[in-house]
Image 1 (tube, rainbow, N blue to C red):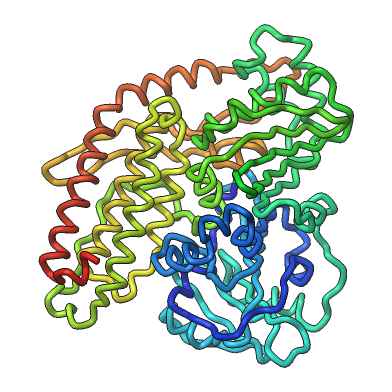
Image 2: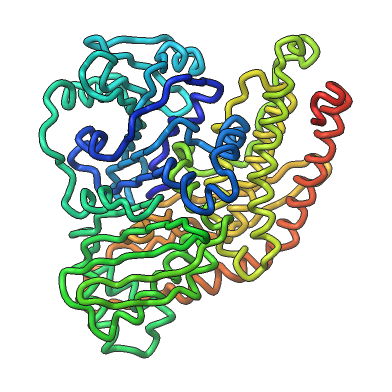
Length: 521
């Protein structure tokens, strides 16, 4: 589901600078603007991250500035707190919306945002409004300078102008109490973590589907009593929350809260969660070594977190809206603009930053590829990072480099399809990848919806809606068939990675030849 929570504030604002600072910020100013029916929320406390012991030791303040200008971070350096919220309807494609909220510095100019969006600055009742074609939504100046309240920028996607206007009308001038669920409100207001994701799960899981899923769980094979206990327990789940703490080291906690005390069956929640993440192609390597603590109605999994895993988690927060439908096999069209004619308009530094950003994303995935044990369960991260490349700003970027970025994103989607069990054909001479994803309606659990739908060589897990009390499951068979398909496609993935590496080296030589040392720096 968080893959579908995609709207980006920061990537659209690259290059804007402000001389004035923002007063101390918290989520309290932002939460009243979150629509009441949101069932997922995320908070990034960027200032707290940079002021952590590790942040200071490694100078994250400067790194943040550099990575943002390079497109590697979607959070502007001037942001203290960023809130994202969504209403998701698991199993219903396109059935979600997302809002993003952050405080604005005094020098922020909505006209500059409109210019970067190549859109016009509109106005509704004195509030600036900008359409974002890339995100299929709108940015709204929710509170203006001189209103007596902190300036707040909101983004909504997908959204029509009417829905953005109604969002503004529902919050402007008459801010009542926070309408979010108590679970999400408490999670957002807890300042103990610098990064927090929470999903309201109450009444989310269908009893028949819970039985179906548990019957297909490898961790519960032959454990009838445990299945019965977990079937009852999971139907009382209130929410799932993921906290990231940065001190000298990075650690993470997964909190699960239930409506009844957790008994001995709680020891199976960790292997079940790992299994769900594996099915969704969203494995976190550290989850296997997490320590489990059961305290009444709460279960907590605690683990260290690598820098790479942190970036994967952040990709869930900052990934832009997914493409309509499923990944397509077509290669991006060749750029129509002649590079020589457009050369005078090219910003060499912007081009180098774009090239570095694309390569940094590829390097993160390449490190996962070097660890074969975990790589086969990372399809969702490939999709997230491909989406991230698509949303990088190409303003002032050499057309050949812009095409290179599009091409790399296409290859990453080909890798994702292969890791989901889809047959992939590679033409190394034409540098093309052809694959098919048969999109069919699926029936997802809350956990699957949170991390993204699991898929097989035949499309999504199409569980259907089980209605009988006695539920059987074919998940083990599906997983085995998928694993065989993934294994069979390993040579094709090797070819794709080789093409990416070769094209990267070729493009760098081409750019240095075109722009000389200025690009090489």
